[in-house]
Image (cartoon, rainbow, N blue to C red; front, side):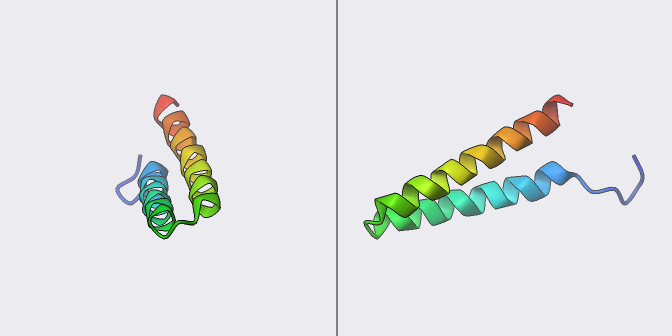
Length: 55
């Protein structure tokens, strides 16, 4: 790895955390459909992160 190579899992981790926060806010506002959708997107991101760590 080069000095300036980026870790793609860090970017995905931030996106994952942002999706979870959006889901929490949606749930707080009573929008359970948006909460479910955002949680599903966050779960897909988590799976990508795990796959990157395995490789």
